[in-house]
Length: 321
Ligand code: ADP
Ligand code: TRP
Image (cartoon, rainbow, N blue to C red):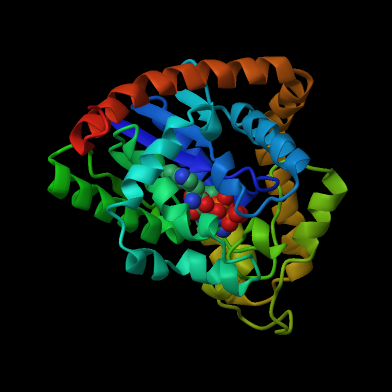
């Protein structure tokens, strides 16, 4: 079974990215034919500064490797190192109704937030479909916000297969429900675009400050509180055992919980959780050549898989004459 997913190098990675997407992906290297890639073409829809894009690409690669991705046991590459994906995007554009793209929430949200409504942003889901279909992936683990993009991919695959004959595997999205949406420090979905993230790697004081500024309600200390309504509780879950989560829920309901104390506890839990990864991340920062070499070898592996798909697509659509 081929499992594939990508992440944008549009800023520093955060704990939402890790628990919702990166951690489940890394586990797949034990059991599946795993493809992980850094979607720098997609990031061009929001990152204008060329140096920032290049820098972020390397840093995201360093993060993945530090978090345990093993390039020997997966195919790890940068999207633009396999430019065949752009050719497939064009071909898929011809079976993609404009209406399908006009309904994309992500496009509408991004335009509402002020990103320019250009053609790249509009075509984003077709490029994403090409990312997935080029490698004939079966399963695509993503956060809930990407569910509609996966539906669009499936639609495009069905349409192409129907028109030109069975060509693409129709992929399934995999959304892990228990960590479906990780809230940010303001209570909205944690996202690089909302300035509400807690970074995976960063300065200790800055990260502590982020934990201290997580939103809470203004109930008095003695009041019993609803754990399910709390951002602190939601962030406690991914780094705790079931028993710890239940014990914290009891502390909420009993009253007497001081949010300030819990914030300190939470910060310490996270700091400890990521300690081994931090050490590995520091090592990666010193080994940029190694990281570049990993990406180069990954791209060669990915290209070898992309080539037969693209040949088939060219045959089917009459480009090979
Ligand atoms: P961001 O919103 O921070 O820009 P991306 O769009 O690059 O994050 O997301 C990369 C992956 O991480 C996607 O699969 C996305 O669904 C997932 N993801 C990002 N933020 C969260 C979150 N707060 N909760 C759950 N999943 C998330
Ligand atoms: N759109 C995805 C995101 O913002 C990133 C992405 C691009 C992706 N291509 C992909 C995810 C292919 C999975 C498969 O998170």
